[in-house]
Length: 259
Image (cartoon, rainbow, N blue to C red; front, side, top):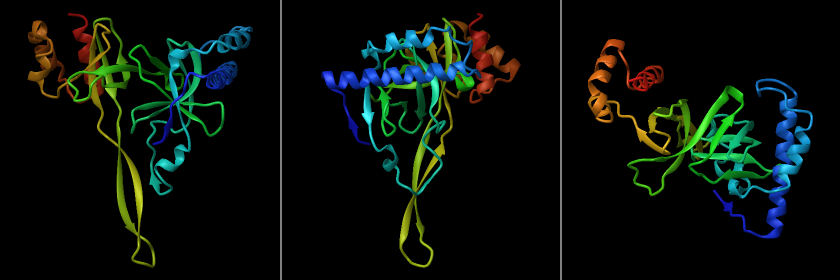
């Protein structure tokens, strides 16, 4: 994937000011049409967005990606995205509405640029929270603990948000390339297929920005909560909690937050 990193020049600053202006106006225009985007904004919302967008927010720190479609080639099955279309989302702490989509293969959040062919990638920061209006999915940027990578930041879907223990899941995809014989000759063509991987679950303690992978073995999970292990063990047995099932884990984390 080729990326062109922005430089702090007046020319690039003007480009991003226009980009923020257009996306903010488009986001508010979609909100005014109704739907699942919450309450209708006040009458002066577009004017407020206009004034806010004239002051480019450097916290977004995006890079430009061009010709995104050629990365995977024409012979593809499926998509690297959780949702192929760009949908409106509010990004905190920037506090503006953008068009975004999540690339589960690359673990990147893409933002639609001002030009049709431009796609921007948001630089990951722990403070970022991205709430997609469609389906009300919230992504948080967390640092994975016990990772081989230094400062391993990624996007995690919020399932249970609590000041004590929060629960997340990580949606991933993998790319599989396979050769397929062409009809009528011995030559083969390469087909790329995107496959969903099994979701992994993580917890975050006291909103400290650290993602701790939840083990699938009960003994290892109880070790994460040594002072509450006996109570949790009893709850798991009584309620037949499955440590690889989303609904069971949500029920378990809700219980842990009460003891």
